[in-house]
Length: 235
Image (cartoon, rainbow, N blue to C red; front, side):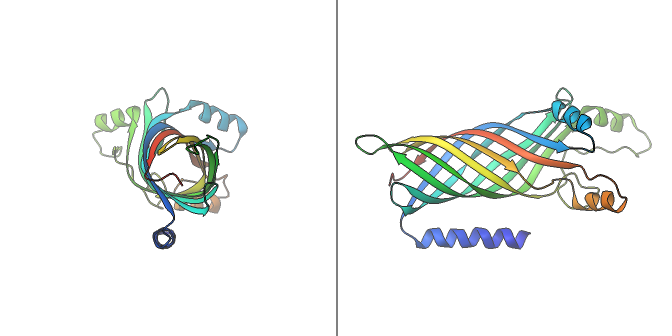
């Protein structure tokens, strides 16, 4: 998976760099993140999802608009950083995850102002993401670990990313990304929505469920963000 992400990133970067018709932008913003689960029964799924609350998130980075049809259609990709996660049980449990994020989108702009500076736009496409750091909170488990004198109950605030059953979450994710916004001159204001498609439960744990003939639960990312960006050109 790491090789696939590297190949995708380098290929897109090369394609963008060698083509001189680019709008390059930098943006910052934030929003809310959440995770959705699927359990064996609808009642359990609804109960857990109802208790999983949004968590504040940050979002920022670079966008590269490669012109397909000038002032109309673009291929856009980004090199970005985004936080994701969730809180639950009245915020006594939470996961806060830092991610490197690469969206690949087709973008359409409609220029409406007389001077051609104002526009509205939409974009959509897939994304890939890699989690590189995270912290977790579980007040009840942390208290139990502190009170335990046998060493059998252990709690670490650092999220472990990996495929093992002892890990907390898968390190890589993919999904769909969609954006809508308004631009004027070099400024763009946008709303972004991303939905993860990969099950973030470690693959060894998933395999254990399948081997035992049990229902495999699912856990997937979701984000809403609002950003403000500055683009060095407005082609």
